[in-house]
Image 1 (tube, rainbow, N blue to C red):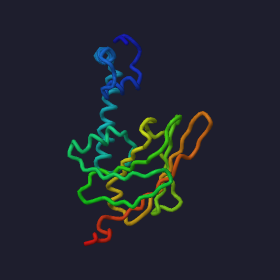
Image 2 (image 1 turned 90 degrees about the vertical axis):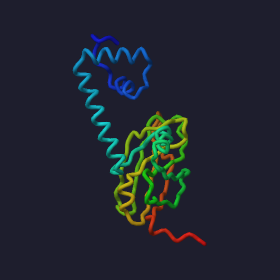
Image 3 (image 1 turned 180 degrees about the vertical axis):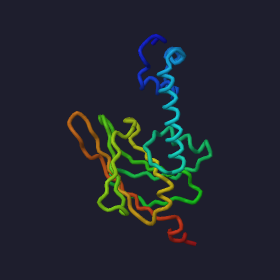
Length: 195
């Protein structure tokens, strides 16, 4: 890619911003950005959107699927993580402590051959309402999907149940990979520990 070339493809710009490009591509992107105001504006917009998304996730306002590397880095940043692992068609009792910063749902799932993954979520507090997340990011080799729950919303809710369903799409159509049940109780509603 040269500075005189067409605009930088969005995927290349994102990969470069995330530090995932090789040195030659990095140099080419830098040279192009020095000569192309349009691509510079696009990069500025991406950075601004990323900051907004980061703030929304940090404040617990939204839930989001993330990669394992992201979750593994959190404790090193001083972020307290509470995790619940659930097998396909399994369930777990869960809560969040007052000092927890992040709540991670680890949904175990076979992902070999999956081309696209969608997630549906149902809350017992909203009967009949299904929240959909289409094209959820995943690593086929990981054997799990990680979801950061919207912590501020979880903390504010009374005892409730969440059902999450993962649906795979591939060359043959779509198929359900598993349902996951989270039975949440607020921290102060837990039974006292046995003596």
